[in-house]
Image (cartoon, rainbow, N blue to C red; front, side, top):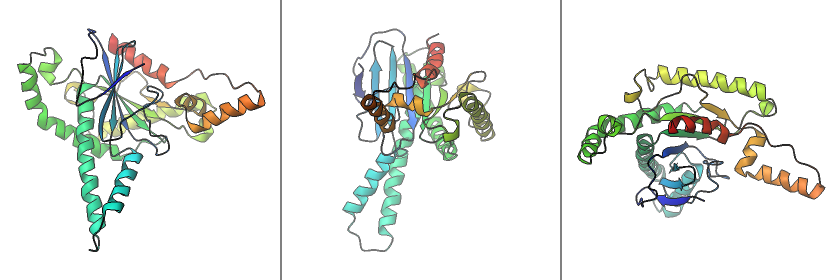
Length: 285
């Protein structure tokens, strides 16, 4: 059971000395908007912003960013523009869309910047097994926005006597970025060895792309985020693994097994929770 609250109204949710903050950003499909699964069973935030989930038992605070990257938010924006539009001027609707989507992108940039500012670990969720190069522009925009605020942020933290890395860098640490691709390529979903090779290959490609774009550097403290050198940071979910996320296909398969009386396949050995736990253990020290 988790305690849910908004980032704009944070209660005194715990008195523990040590917690780990995990952020979830990225894209979510329209039919299944919960990109945090299997970490969180459900999300309740319908507006743009950050929804907080506190897990008292595990001492983990999850920050779920709802942004323009979520398909449901874009569809909602499009429907509102269509209903409210009364203009007869040619291209007025298109201009309205550009203004509204631009404002949505700025709000999302601020939310993602806050995620990278507060979290120890950030999970970038993707509904497909392909890394979107559009994230490069987003990361640069977020890093630029963070650089503009770092002086004011550090000064405010100094006045509050936060101490430690808060005073030096304006945040608890340089967050570790992990990539969760929620749907592995179909031919590899039943081939664990081949899927593992693909994960390692994608890790090499992502690392090369981020280094070439100078988004990650040798000085982690000055970077927006860090990539672990000798640890896995890419995870691709197979069909059996995504069943833990309570997607429609897994629920239907379970219903078929119940109706026919057949035994379901044994639970998969690999899971995203297990993948994330190794990074959480390091964060807790």
